[in-house]
Length: 357
Ligand code: DAH
Image 1 (cartoon, rainbow, N blue to C red):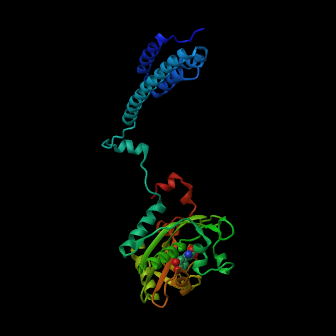
Image 2 (image 1 turned 180 degrees about the vertical axis):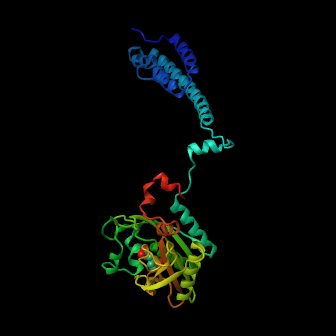
């Protein structure tokens, strides 16, 4: 009978283990050593399994020593691991260091190219700048919306025929409520007005840019995933003149001299009266061409005075407050501004196209 480790060699076991552990150069190596020295097949584990063969007194004594040895070795490994990971971290930091002072010469730059913002992002930023300059604040809302925000609060109860104006992607159909990918940025209006009503923080002067979705087959003038910017003003005694003036000011500021806006009667469930707004065709500058079907005008978006039914839905007193709203496509704006023949180019990531902007 005997134990794989004699009592007097237990201390040697710890000394040897320490030496071996100290020599480890990486966490991986340390893991291997740990398995070898403390794992199921280690001498230590075997010695532990054989304790049963000893008589009671010996078993107690030997067991205690084996336990102490294991604890000592575990501590050595733990210390070493802290040490090794600290060193590994330092090495990684050095290896991944970015030299921010490095000078990129024009020659190098011309070979690696230089990233920049997508033309739609650039357009969105510029539009937002124009509106911020006019005193609007910028707000955002979620892209997945409930039926309430995308339709119902916008004065379209279930089965309202106007819902078919938007070809909708449904994420969840049904009870108690459907969830859709928003078909326009108008639901953000509802969120802002609900919040303002709750906090009594009217008036509102906000623009809301964002991505929208429609089950549309992309063509030269439409994308299924596109961007809109929404505007909302809720204040006292707002008139249609305020709306028309805001749109004309924006059009001149963004498109420059010679491009104007005009409003044409239209219908949206959430505004009354409603209008479509058009701008001077940027291709022919009003003379009439193929792009504008000879009219000299291009449609950009919709607008109108906030319908009292919408104020009712969000809990704003329409006797006290009035407002106007508008919404138009950012991609469409970029298309007009840069005279992009086919809107699908915006999503194809063809570098020859992207580099133009
Ligand atoms: N949400 C409408 C659309 O996507 C555009 C629009 C029309 C927005 C009138 C408005 C508005 O805020 O008042 O077709």
